[in-house]
Image (cartoon, rainbow, N blue to C red):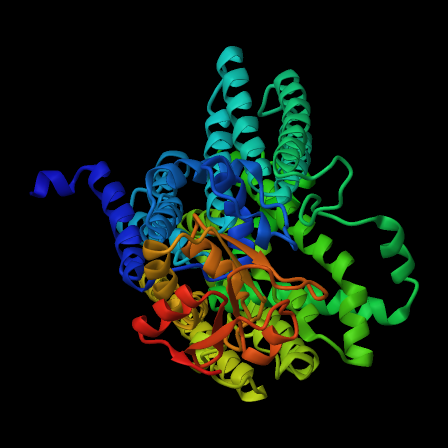
Length: 608
């Protein structure tokens, strides 16, 4: 046993199984989608290829990446039970996140010369749980994040590759990985921009290029063209004509409107709030440790920019290449959100309105994919430069106080009653965002607990008890993961399932006894989580075509579902319908006597 535990592969495997095992604990709670619209839109191409007709609920369709849909296509062929199908796809999301643990373990040991098993193991677990989404639902982010890690791995491999043919091969592999990330989400264009800027910076510092330029240019051009072609082909396959406006097909909007908006002074206030709010999100999600990481990596990059002799040493090449790549991606992402969202934030700040725009201030999810590799770099850097933690701790404390001060006094008064910004603070204030009211104290208690944790790390650094930082940090990350898996994504999915469970059970029985091919449904959105039930029904009954009833459209199907009898009656073209109650806020209308008799035998309560 002792010989096995001395083997590197044992701890690499252990890191994966710990990361995966913790996530797997939540699989029994998974029944259906959490963000119903976004998820079913990403499923639609795969479902269509598998022979299902879901066109009737796709009136507000948004594009979610043909690469992601192709990945899910085999699941729709293999699994026919919707719950089993969904859980299988969720397990894939879990695997994508959990693979970060063995990848980061290997990278820390192989390319950063970390030998301490304690650091390698807890560092890899921290990287695997440094996430903004929990794998209790499906989303392109899970695959995208893994592609970022694989890109980092290939970049590090390129640094140790001198052979021209091998360099060309790894460059091609790198662009394949980034290209697939781009096919998963339009945000993948950020990786291409970040890579180009990182290569230019690296070339300035070391007077050499880490990649094969001809392969980079050719593969990048082919990749961009290929992804755009694939997107257009998929949209054509779904029935959209060339030139039709479809959401999510571009990562950025037009510059003309942005430039015009910044002529208004208020827009600059919105811009600053987004920048500082996003920076503060990194602090909230790392209990302040992000400050040390960013300080360390900025010092390396600044010395690299000045071509200081210390940084010209080969051991700094991995830090400079990966930090410039990931930090460029972070800057591009936050900058893009700030430019696009500033005017909307400023408008609501001044005039009131839909506070959903304030999510731009705290949308950690968009740049979280690049934070994990930066965390890995920070771990490696401070293992080898431990003395810097102690000498920088007061500077870090000052930065923490300034950012948290601005957050509390300038941003919290804007968002205090909006639950969409609360998720980084909810675990610390024990706020179940979909059920508990969001108040000033929600954010203040959260900030207080985060401050206490930061002071704890400050104390450990002062006492040189550094070995406890990573284990404590892992506990914080895992707790945050578990809380949000239950009370955020999980709670929303549970509400979706609870609301529609009775209806789905009845339709299951109905379609087994009667021939039902189409059902009309009047879209309505849940008070818990705000998700559309038409999407949950369509996914749960994939072989039946559900048709959303438009505002001025009459009901034509023999079966119709809606939130209440009165809403449905205004759209009926017949008086033959009889209504039955499903649950607290859901009714079904049946047109023929045969169907009505079946419903009464089933035990549904008539409300007519």
